[in-house]
Length: 137
Image (cartoon, rainbow, N blue to C red; front, side, top):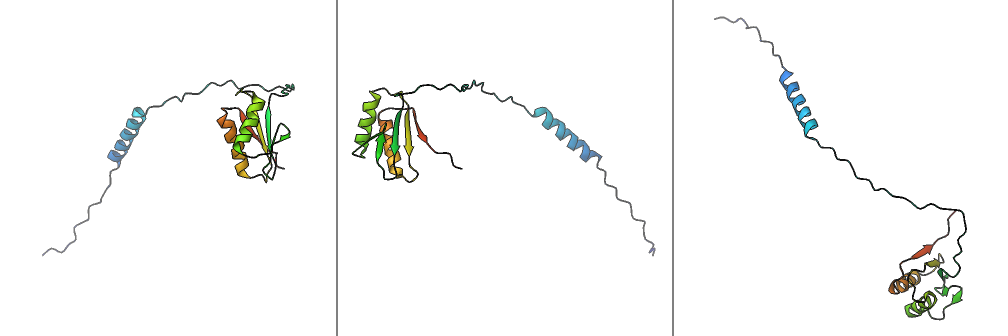
């Protein structure tokens, strides 16, 4: 009986084929990737000037106080219903739907009052209306 230990063979891990496969995958993905140019919109924005433009009687101003009372161009409305607000705005607009409408509401004004003014303008087909806000400090 021979009890002599056989010398263990040294194990060697050859990583060359693994590196070749990784490089081939890298080349494949680089070649197959497509790059798209994103289209960009060319806009020409309006320029502002410091000249005052007279807009007398060209803007309808709806003011809503904290109690929900409407003032249209400085005149108080007796009724706060949507019909009276719509009628007052239509009377001042004289059917012109392009007149800008400015809605100024008190910070404590009921939200429904502002929505009523916007709804009245929308029912008249007015598309140029904006809400005024004070700049906070």
